[in-house]
Amino acid sequence: MAELKKAKKRKAVLLPEHRAPAILPRVGTMISKLSMAFAGTRASSIFQFIRRLLARLPLLSHLANRIHNSLPPNLLWPCQMPYRLNATIHIVRDGDIVTDLWVWANNQPVLWTHGSFGKGILSRSEATWARRYLQQLRPGEDRREYLEDITRRRREERNPTSELTCVEMKDLDVAEEDVEAMEPVQLSPYETLFLVENRYLVVSDAGGQMYGLGDLWEMFSLVDGDLPMLYAAYHYYRSKGWIVRSGLKFATDFLLYRKGPAWSHSEYAVVVRPLSEQTPEEEEQQHRLADSWQYMFAVSRVASQVRKTLVVCFVKCPDHIEYPPDLRQFQVQETTVRRFDPNVNRN
Amino acid sequence: MNSHPKFKEAASMCGQFPRRARILFQAYMNVKYEQRHDSVKMEVLENTQLPVLTSAAPTNKQKMHIFVPVSAAEDISIKLLGDILRDCQTCVAPESLESVHLAIIDNDSTIVYYKISEGLVLPTEPEDSPSP
Image 1 (cartoon, helix red, strand yellow):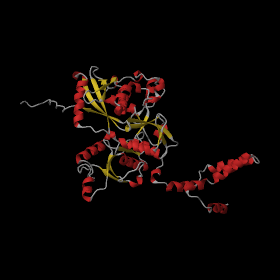
Image 2 (tube, helix red, strand yellow; image 1 turned 180 degrees about the horizontal axis):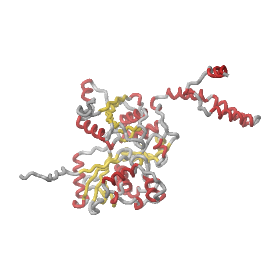
Image 3 (spheres, helix red, strand yellow; image 1 turned 90 degrees about the vertical axis):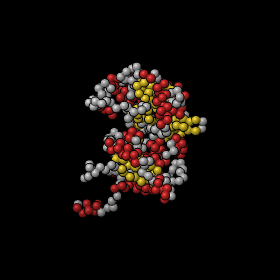
């Protein structure tokens, strides 16, 4: 018996990433039994085909990994979306010129649970307005305390009369069939481009016309000239696994979360600055940390008071950018800025 | 946006100012349905021709708040701020204006309110002021 065990151990063992899941041998055995039960029929040949396919899964997994590693960097981020989603783009034109555009998606939980994408237009982050509205209308059905309720409760504790002046939820005159449609989820341009680039989002307008990645890049860049630089920074941090959200509330470009706003506060506040090709003299003048030290101190103070570390992310963009851009031509350099007080931080 | 169930409440003003339709509608929805202010209406500032929101002040229904929706990507000059404040004084009766707020809206619908006023707030007299 011991010799038999040693003989089994001497077999070639696949590397962990090439092994098939443990459940497959049981499935293979079951399919073999089904094949024997239906011997002589067409079903038997189908079961045998499935069994041979399962036996080759480790090889297929190995081939899939080799293909995955050879893909360009843009597609290497392991996006967690289980399936492709749809979103609607709204475009405002002045003649032929695009003056404003935004992307709304239906409130689909997978957007929030798999990467914290999007923001409800009536909520702080996750779209919860409909649930909070129904919670007020039907007390007792949903006992969950939402983020907005926590904020409101703390405001009441500071100022007991603040909530007495608000209109009650039940007096807002919202028809029951309209409750779910009251709060679409808005995707920022960076989230839209990231999801479309990784083929997890399909964008179309109200008339059904679909927009590809190149069209979206051209339209978004008309509205925001700094889009390539900001998107390069967004993609950089997303690729490292950070959840990237808007940093408007703290006077920065982005906020970085480890898991997402639902789990913890953000740790880093990111300010994105350009880094361009200049002569050595111009380079010394242009590569300034900020417009002024007063501005940098102000942003640093705001970040430190809310317990975040300020990160200045320099992005070097290529001279000529095509849409969609090849992010391999961009360079990113990060610098953290933290105030040091010798009297306080000596040790 | 036309398919939103509450868009009809803002359709007229959004059609008049299509470039500001998104920020106007989002500010309106936030002030009325999330912050739940009372008597939310839309007005237009006379000189700057900017659409704004007015709502009744919570502590005194005779006074009003004014919210000016602006985009986070928009360039706002000191001159424009001054013009907005002067227009707000004429938009409502001066004695009924409680405060003026900028509603700054980002491209992911994040909205931040900042109260603006003209001039400094005068310091309060200290309780034990020395006699001259």
